[in-house]
Amino acid sequence: MKKQMRKIGFSAGADDENEIQQGDDFFEQMFAKQKESIRQFISAKYLPTGHADNMEFRTSLELEYELREMINASTNALNAVMNDLGFQVQFIEDSPNWVVYTK
Image (tube, rainbow, N blue to C red; front, side, top):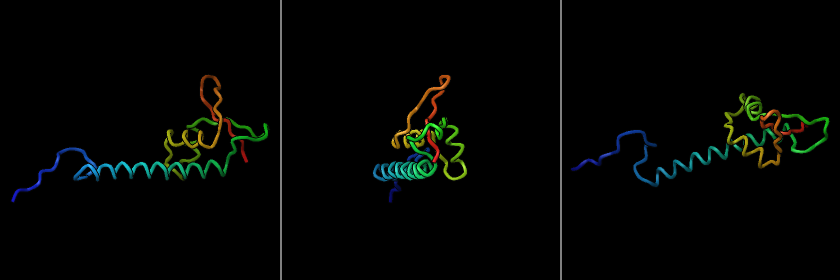
């Protein structure tokens, strides 16, 4: 009997192309779950529009810092959620800041 040869190196542990594609699907699902968690947190704390008295400016890094205890948020996921929710960006001293209104 002849043994089936496996590839040597870093791989997802998949034996064929279908399993690798399912692995990619796994990461897409995890990214979607991460985005949903971020969306819930941002929606609970901030609004995209509101009264000028409640307006604040937050960078993506500041928002990631707020999320650090609950969610391991990536900048890409955070920015995607902020865009989806309709938050605007304003540049202050050449630094992009999200315009948020506190609830």
